[in-house]
Length: 232
Ligand SMILES: O=C(O)c1cc(=O)[nH]c(=O)n1[C@@H]1O[C@H](COP(=O)(O)O)[C@@H](O)[C@H]1O
Image 1 (cartoon, helix red, strand yellow):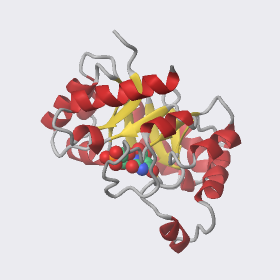
Image 2 (cartoon, rainbow, N blue to C red):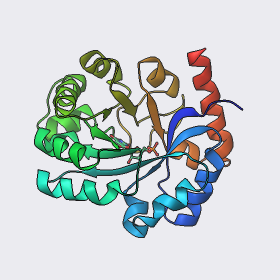
Image 3 (cartoon, rainbow, N blue to C red):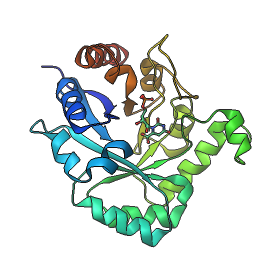
Image 4 (cartoon, rainbow, N blue to C red):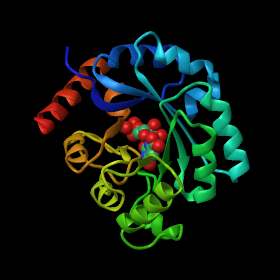
């Protein structure tokens, strides 16, 4: 039995049956499954137990909280009892908000999302973030870690720069991962699984390239094998 790969499969499914089926197919191969807004807003807290099953897989709760510190503290406290391994907040919420989340969910890693991987450089410029995305990602990473975030979410294109900024002890999570030749869909700043891992990511978030495959279990196993070759 090989160790599960450092992959979080995004269970972005319209219904719980599909999500639980995907979770069952991929959990022999990956360390983590990710529950996002689509499932959580439809089914609420019960969804966590359904996808966790009996497998002991890590559950990453991706709610991308972004509000004033008091509101985020309450929200983080509300979901901490579900014991997700990871919970996301937006780094743009600022240091007091990030600190509030960290203090309210002490047994969960708070992951601060830097710049969404769906934004192109032109999109970033349009919302007031000019220049190289890696510069802004580094600044946001430094603020988030200074506020106590134990993990960061960034594009695999920026993961080397973010690693240089925060050092080895912060968990770096990269969505925007596409196997070579795969459709990028609504993602803008992407890289391959091998490049993301080679550049210093600790956990790769991968959704549709796995869940949209005819056999999600086989797709997860193939990417896991490619990652083992990078590490060998
Ligand atoms: O926080 C995230 O997980 C996240 C941050 C980000 O910048 N970009 C991003 O795509 N994600 C999530 O990662 C997953 C990517 O899914 P795919 O594009 O299908 O691989 C989705 O569930 C997104 O919500």
